[in-house]
Every structure is written in C-alpha cells, then in structure tokens.
Image (cartoon, rainbow, N blue to C red; front, side):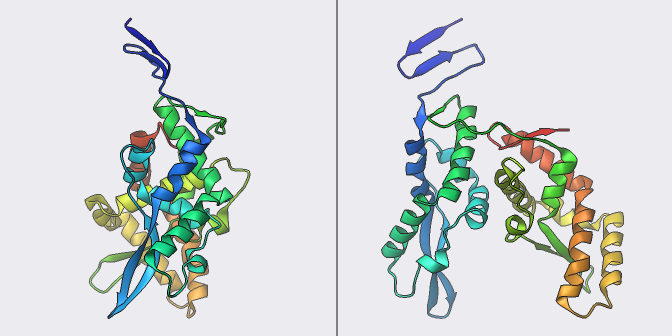
Length: 276
C-alpha cells in the first residue's frame, strides 16, 4: 500500500479512507453570507423589487460544489427554516449594497438557519473525508421508502385537467414546514429540502411531462375533480383535494423511482439513510 503522511491528514491511495484538512465551525459559517445575494428583480414597467436569491460561490470554498449544484436545496432551507424575513430587512429606498449588507449580516447571525446549514455541511464534508473540529453532526435517521414518500407527497398541492386534456400541476413549496414540522423527527428540514429539490429537478424532465397521462393516474385525477365539482369555495375544495392528492402521490411508483435515483446520486451528503 502506498502511503503519504503529512500535517493535514492521512491518505491511503488504495485504501478506503481519505482524510483531508480538518475544517472548523467558523470556516463553515464564514461561507454562509457568500451563498446569498440581493438582486434587483423587475416587476413591471419601470418598476423593480429587491429580492434575496442563492448565489454561486468561488471554487476555493470548501462547500462550493455543494452550494453551486444544489441551489434549490439551500433555497428551501432558507425560505422555510430561517428566522430572517427579507421583506422586513429590505426596505424601500435601500441601495443594492445596503440591502446585501443587511441580509448578509442577518443570515450570518440566524441561529436557526446556521444549525441546519452546519449539519448539512458536516455530512457533505464527511463524504470528502473532512471533519469539522468542534462539531459532531447528529446520527442520520433511517427512513423507509414509504416514510420518504409521505414527506415528498406533501409538496403536491393539487392537479387539474384543462379543456385540451392537459394536466396542470400546483406544487407547494412554502407551508410544508410550518404545517408538518415534527421536532422529534431528526433532520426533518434536510429531508424536506432533499424532496423539494428532487421534485423541482424532476419537473424539468420529459418523464414529468408524460407520467400524469398514465391511464390509471389520469382516471384518479378526473375522479377527484368529479368529487369536488359541487364544492363552491376554495377552502372547501382544498380540504378535499389536498389530502387526496397527497395520498395519491404517496403511492406513485414514478415518484418513488425518481426519489430513489436522486438519493443514490447524492447519498454521501444527505441528512438521512434510506432503506428500501
């Protein structure tokens, strides 16, 4: 076996373990402000609005590949598990530089988001053979596929057919956490973020476009519409449609196949272990 010893760690060229230079909690937290930027977003003729978005970070940062390849994952965490509300920080008349400074300072000091970000980073760096000195992430929870499907199904708000026979989807990315958060479920925010990103990625594929037209699935959607046709208020329809759509998606084999493929692609750094 070829070996190399150095001050930064131990590498086995033909072995299973590769240890890199240890990181620190401060190293990780220092990268958080660079993940976000406030941009000017046009909202109409001669009108714009300042909005916080996910930025790309330089490849010299230890989390660059994670951040740059998984912006939807980070976006879900910041939108649903952060105490920072951009609308309360970014006020009319603020310059772009002032808005960025205010947001970066707030997100860097946000203990809620920092905790989940640090846990995510620890799993990712562990996959690279790097530990974070002073931080031990929680043991990854073990999920069955049915349990993961239950979480993923909550992102499907409803679907509807239109006169030309197409199916229109309405996905829910906002109130999953608030209405379903269970503090006893270890790493629930990271599991939700995985499902969110997987479903958004799926929505840009040809498979997503074609799968609703499976005859059995299409028939169930039409049946659901028939059951709600006489309901006159949006709230009444939502009370029927939301649980029915989630139940339908929780046993959808195409969704299951997609989640498994996404999991196997990124299992080294995800915040859970899937048994199937």
